Image: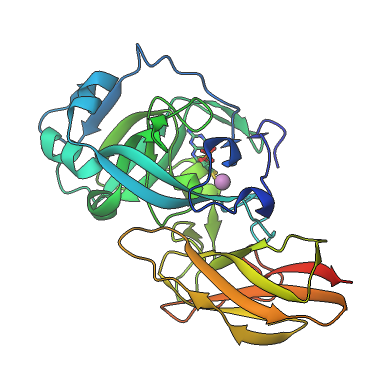
Length: 316
Ligand SMILES: Nc1nc2c(c(=O)[nH]1)N[C@H]1C(S)=C(S)[C@@H](COP(=O)(O)O)O[C@H]1N2
Ligand SMILES: [Mo]
């Protein structure tokens, strides 16, 4: 990762057992470090192709009807090494205002692009940037994006993008612009290091790399943990998620796979609990989980950012 990037830490599976990840266990990424934005002077502009540009402060946002949105937050990983295995993830509850309400209040035109700009600036991968910027198709922003100013019931803190950030549930973390200062309605995608150059990947059927948006199908084993000494009766459990609901999770014991119990996803784009009780003979074993989503996509065995998660355990 670029030296300027703040990667505070990568919480391991031992920090991910809870359904809702505690704020201190949520990974932190900032390509230009952590911005510190004064909530007292912070403003959000809604501008571009709008009938009435908005200039909102935090009190204005809080006065609008709010929503609580539980969702997975997951980092795509290093944009310079897109195939590297990543397990930086969390499942949190955002509080904020639907972007649709802001677009309606501003009288937004047809787009079709919504640019989201953050207050942070600096150099990444040798390129100087005057801001962090992402873009979301206006239709997707209207359908599900929020401007979040609360995280797990508390005000959104500096590290996670306070006073307010964009949240696009079901999309990779990179799209969830922290320290948000502007939402701009435009008729084209913005040219920017973080929109058209980094965070791209090949997609089957598309001509040329596409921006990383939809979450991959993924799972993480939260129990037992890597290296654990366990008894002969073990329940292998963890979380599975993706852009689409996860339809099945297989749990492997030394390469023999069985179907785990899996909770349905429900209304929001959260992670889903899986569990399978297995009997292990004495010795060393490799336990693994492999998720399949409703569209039939399967976690690959290796060589990918969302490769199957395997843990080694021993039974004495
Ligand atoms: N303004 C701004 N927003 C940003 C980033 C950034 O560097 N600057 N990093 C993105 C990336 S790559 C991720 S994974 C998430 C991380 O959010 P978190 O630090 O709250 O976990 O923020 C995204 N939003
Ligand atoms: Mo990320």
